[in-house]
Length: 325
Image (tube, rainbow, N blue to C red):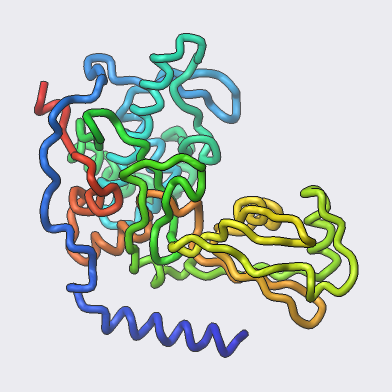
């Protein structure tokens, strides 16, 4: 296994040197203008946020909310164009959630501050504590980023899209239907080669046969006999996500196994040897929509936030509502 990782490290290092710019996504064309505007009122652009820690609903100004989302979800060391792309995606995601709330009067909030349910959010005080001595520099950088994309939103058929995003893909993003069971025309696989150069691209989880057996018990599987025969060959999507895998004769999704073993993604290999199981995991997150690391890689190669968003959300339009109104 050590030799395998050494070989992969050498290949990735050479890739950083040898991959020509022409191998990057061709995103030099800006998307066509939208034919209609989303149903969003800018006069009172706020979000009702259910705070995960207090379980209270707070009304937060849109700009302040986006600041808190990026402070929570994104590295401030990333390129400004990648941060701009994230700001627009986060705003669009929240606008879509707000529209869902407006169509359902019984719902008391637009969105939660949970990164597991929606997207993470922290206050400025929490951001300052997180950034420490870099707080002033990062605050100024983030405010500049938010100013530059103020009013931008991603739409499909004139409505805010489900602007999903994740930390690192497995080299190609995933189709929404393979993760959530619902297809979206703009959440389809696209190449994201920069992710393979991330230090966090590969991770490994090792467990003993007994630990493996214990972890599978809550899923209703009692494993007996030779551990070498417990696991079948997985069925994968074109992006590498495990769609189905049989363990102990019972079928599970990659998501099931990811949760059971706290894996970074459902794109994994599983092997048994010397009395234990080893998961080799690619990427971090569900893999749908924009890859944050991939966006940063594209930005470093000269792509603008418009080009990044056009690549990861194909077929959508990017519009500035404030220029339209």
